[in-house]
Image 1 (cartoon, rainbow, N blue to C red):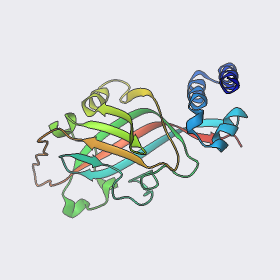
Image 2 (cartoon, rainbow, N blue to C red):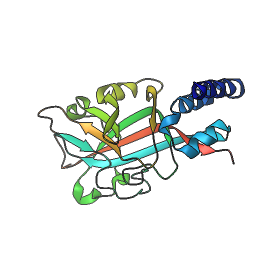
Image 3 (cartoon, rainbow, N blue to C red):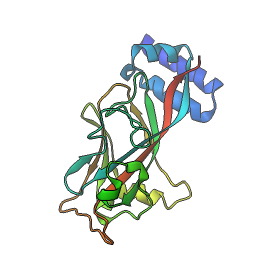
Length: 211
């Protein structure tokens, strides 16, 4: 009971002192407190956590069929390709996800290879992707399962991003960013292209201390 009262007092303090967006994110972190590290919980209770704008980008080659993890094959962060530390967030970095976008590009593997940051991710999404789902997991538990068609439709709006209910990605926790393709999904190529590439952009806030 005391723990709940302390959380409510913390939320009230945040509401009275923060801008609406910061209040929403910090209140979310307070409510998610038991999922966070003891150090992060302490900093929140002391008012020493300041959510900071953060964008995470992952680019990878994909083949249609089954379920493909965009983080598969990475052992560390690679600038321009993967902002995750392999398949985890960096030490002491918690991320509150609010918006996302998924883009697609093609290229010949002979010229692109593993340089996924050199692909132009402006091609229209093929049917195989439009019929697929994006699954966000941590510790093999599904955090969000979202239709890629919905993500793509959001790009045609003024916002350009799909806004979702806040989701917490914890530091040092095995993460999956998976594309679940429909049955019999396949990519069709023209003009000599022989590979497909996906760019996933996650936008939200990281937990940063005020000192």
